[in-house]
Image (cartoon, rainbow, N blue to C red):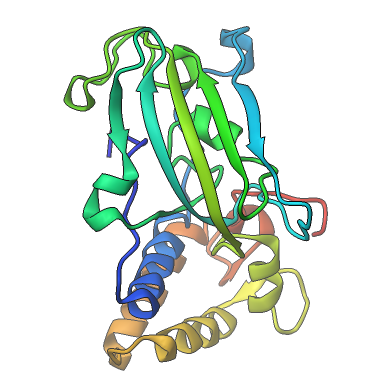
Amino acid sequence: MRHRAYIRPGVSALGTMLFLFRLAVFLSLWGCSNAQGQTEEESTEEVKIEVLHRPENCSKTSRKGDLLNAHYDGYLAKDGSKFYCSRTQDEGHPKWFVLGVGHVIKGLDIAMMDMCPGEKRKVIIPPSFAYGKEGYAEGKIPPNATLMFEIELYAVTKGPRSIETFKEIDTDNDKQLSRAEIELYLQKDFEKDAKPRDKAYQNAVLEDIFKKNDHNRDGFISPKEYNVHQHDEL
């Protein structure tokens, strides 16, 4: 979806929908490239971050690959006009998204790193990390627009493509994911869903994962093939 500032909403049937969201993300990120936006070489502009509130007790902060739940309001910095408010969209539910993989514009991926649950920030995002020269007419964002967001983060949880998830799937600790290991992981996730999934559906998901990610066709998915959030832990 072109407009990456608007994200899939949270829902009242939280358990089932969070499972479905995790599954959709899990599948979409096998082979996913990073977010849109210019590289540092293409622009000297920076995302400006102002911390409005940070809890005294913060045992976990957000990092690339985490699944976040947040509310945010978006404004045009030029005149302060609001173009988006998550609290008035989709019954006002906070938004679930994975940080650092392009679910949101690049500026928000940058702005929401190292946040604590309960933290509030005000961020200024230049055009090169938002919608650039083209803008986004459907979202009422003109070309070359600098954006301002007010963000409140509610939750930071382990994402579907985190290093922790890789280790959880890799039950024999050989630093590669076999078909049996991924099948077992999917089976456990399917069991969390309120609606049971038949074996044919599970097999189709498994086949799709290996088709898209086992690039050398050796029957395993390596850390490089799996991990769009490469960390030193592997």
